[in-house]
Image (cartoon, rainbow, N blue to C red; front, side, top):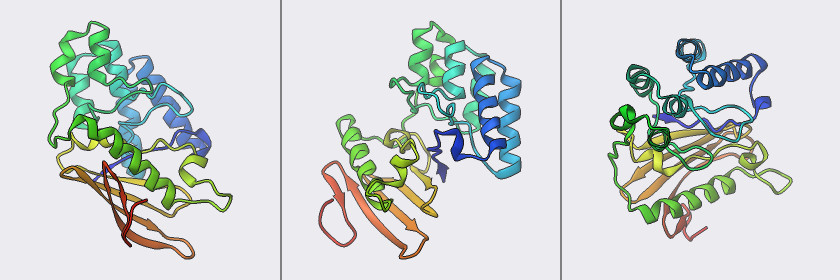
Length: 224
């Protein structure tokens, strides 16, 4: 299952891993592809972390290595290697751009075919936004804090994007939430989402809810 890395703050990681994330972002910004692949291989081997779709900690742009490759007009073999590592073509930056959009704007037309998203699970375009909205509502509802806020907002997590699921062979992802001691398994089934969530703390629970363009259909019945 794909892994959605929602971490955006340096203090959410141990110092050594925050430093590696900064090193990855710096290398991608500078088109230092040897270092990019070195860091990706290192963290995958050491802690089974998959950072190919991770953006700079604390940065607003949301640029992943694939977005940077598109911006620089990297050689096709660099893009192919990022895709082989699981880079998502449908993932958008902070301003809503996909890698293919960035390459086109920069005139790097040799990357157009490689970066064009291959949609395996079609959703009506006008349903993606409502599904995203209701999924995010459910996540916040299931991860509350005692002060009335929620863990995702409190930690500045970037919440999963439904559009990414449409390109995955198995349209599902795992979204861990620090402090929840669990997280969310999100699967696209037809035109709705099946969301399994686990909270492994005192009074914790496991449940399955459904998300449609109309709202969140709670396990116990009713709409959220």
